[in-house]
Figure 1 (cartoon, rainbow, N blue to C red):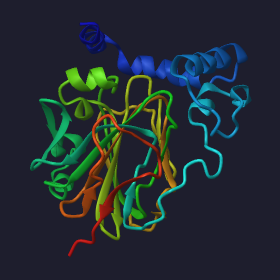
Figure 2 (cartoon, helix red, strand yellow):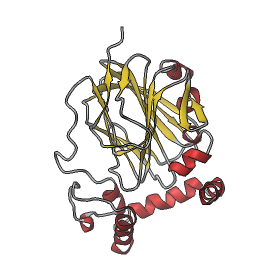
Figure 3 (cartoon, rainbow, N blue to C red):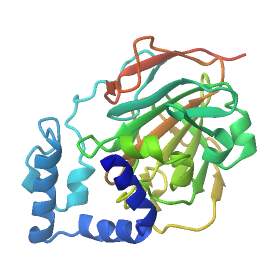
Length: 284
């Protein structure tokens, strides 16, 4: 009942207004703002800073600098096999498997469509019956996004929307959650075919950034925007491609026949950036 009330309240909240406030607070360098915010999150979510660079929480100039903190070299070894797809983030697997036609599993009894997620029928058609994984980043997690395999950027789509929380309660009770929230879909060409990585915004996510374009949000727009890239920007497996401010979700999409997931992976499993998730196959 408590979870349902929390989700019901979110339908009434001014999502973007709250996120704009968080955006400003998170970037404040005033000690009386940044230090309480950082230490509250450290206590509340038991954040482990041993792998961070630097590990001293008071060394960060703002809450956002702390939240998007880098890791010390070697903290996340990336599986070296070029045929192994790796996790792009630290997080929890919300869902993993194969699409049923154009439908992805959100939670037990709830699905949504590729067309609604990507906002483009041509993009969606390429991934029917393909492989997908949904990874949730909690506030305690490392919040940079890395390439799950080597690839070259060919396109991106920004889709406006609400900013519901993406925690387990919201996933269970908000129909089509990931198609309602603001998001950025990035398409890459790889040696094994195409791959799409969708960065889904959430309540208090003040920005989504990419390494090639900087801040995508804010500002929060009212219409979808598409951009085609010539495929000349290529990133290695494990290389940083973007980041979130505060917790959110990443969705991976691959065409049919290109990937076999690790058999032991189940929803609820914790994964770390660079960890092997599945084996890729070249498509004809």
